[in-house]
Structure formats: structure tokens, C-alpha cells
Length: 198
Image 1: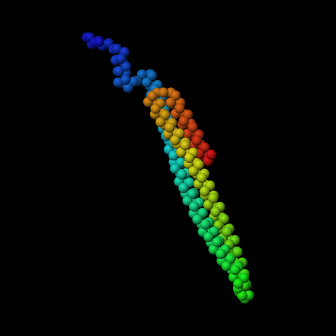
Image 2: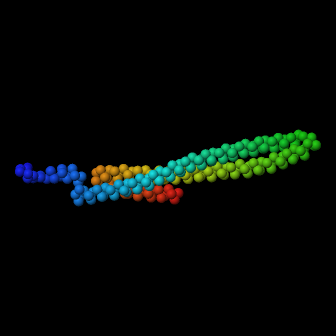
Image 3: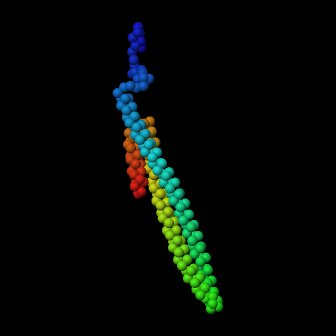
């Protein structure tokens, strides 16, 4: 009520005026600084999450590249084995020919058999080397896929932590804030495991 320039505030008037001025009281300034702290932590989590996501993408790309290298080496090894089989067929024909050929041609076929055996040994060595390289690339690809999954798990945990931070800010529930810190910590631990190739 007001009369003659005198104004009396009711309790609800004071709260409305306080809210209209942005709430500059002690309680609200404490809440604002607390909210600011959560915002800073959220920004840090988002930055770490972006780094983890980048690493996850890089390991996924590497896995694909390594798998491609494995397939190329496997194809090269298969070509060598086909070449080996062709030499074996020629050796077999020479062995048959030595039995059927006249005496004057037997030395020629004996030399051919010897030559094919030598060539086959070299071809087999190269094919086995290419197969070993293919397997090595497959192992590297599998390691990168495992590491990619770790980075993805870490990134997901950090994204969940950011969501919890937003809900904690809106609801002002402390347990959600603690949950945000816990999930963010878990995400960082999984990221460290990814970086250590575990």
C-alpha cells in the first residue's frame, strides 16, 4: 500500500523486484559462480571429447587403410601361388616328357625340371612373405579397430557427461553434477586406455 509517497512492500513484491533485477543477492551470486564453474568444466570436457573424437576417426581411417593393404598383399600372394602352380604344371610335364623322350632329349628335360624346382622355391618364398605381410596388416587393422572402439567409448562417456551437466544446471540437482564428474572421469580413463593401446 502506498499513501502520500510512502510505499509498503509485501514479501512477494520484494521477490519479484529481486528477480527483475537479475537476482544480485548473495545466494544467487553463489549459484552463478557455481553455474560458471560447471560451464567451464563442460567446456573442458567438450574440448577433450573433440580430441577423442578426432583420434577415433583417425584410428578408424587407419584400420580401413591397413585392411586394404592386407587385401592387396593377399592378392599378390594369391598371384604368386598361381604362378607357383603354373611352374609345378610345367615341371610335371617335363617329368612326364623325360620318361617319353628319346635319350638325346632327356638331358634337356632334366635341366628343365631342375630350373622349375629352383623357380618354384623362389616363388614359394615370395608367396609366403606376401602372406605374412597380409597377416601383419590384418593384425594392425584389428588393433586400430580396437583402439577406435576405445576412443568411441570415451567420446560417448564425455557426451553423456555434458548432457548431465546441462541437466544439472537446469535442475540444480547436486547428484546429477556428481554424476557428470563421475562419467567424465570414466570417459577420460577410457581415453587414456585408448592412448595406451589397451
